[in-house]
Image (tube, rainbow, N blue to C red; front, side, top):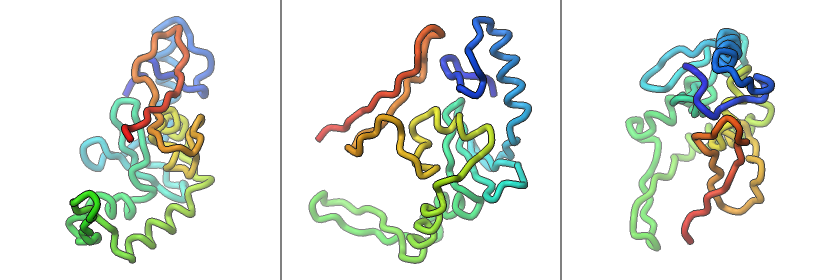
Length: 173
């Protein structure tokens, strides 16, 4: 893993002009960060054993999200179809089926959601929050979210002299 062009975390301090210095700062951070144990594809288990939860992260370049707060939740999300843990429900208005979790699974996910505020993953949390898709994983609201439906987005490429500004994409209504 190496720092993606345009990604610079506050934890790393002021962004240096030298590529060599950027790489040194990133390498130091990466050496201290809890190691990621591969599970499959771009899914990894955080190796830090003293964490209350050992989350499974999806890491694709610098885009990192919590895919499950522990191995059990990850597996429940990942193999729900194979375990028959949802019921297909027909939506009359849209004329299509959608999946509705069985009550037992809904309770498991609801309990997990109640425990989100205050969660932490040393070193990795700031990278997860850099990308707007990760805020809900910690029970947080992305900056600039005014409660309206919208998809917060961050640019994937930012010139060194530009600031990363979060924008909101609103779907077609």
